[in-house]
Length: 101
Image (cartoon, rainbow, N blue to C red; front, side, top):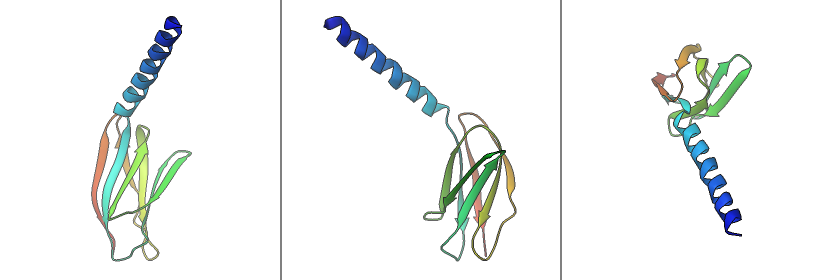
């Protein structure tokens, strides 16, 4: 019984360690959007991978894999040209403030 408990604890420690390591290498794209309209969406596209999120409290955040991403901001009245950005492994890329009229 003691050997089983020790093995279980060992497995749990390894799994927690792997998840912690993965979280440390997580890449992100963040930014702010200044818009007079409420419904603003941000899209990120990398090849066949695509993500979208609604701007919340003027901010957005994507968890992405490293590589080149095209980020586009859109509301009903305006579509900002997509910006190509390069995201490195384990880094957060801050796009700053994007202004929509």
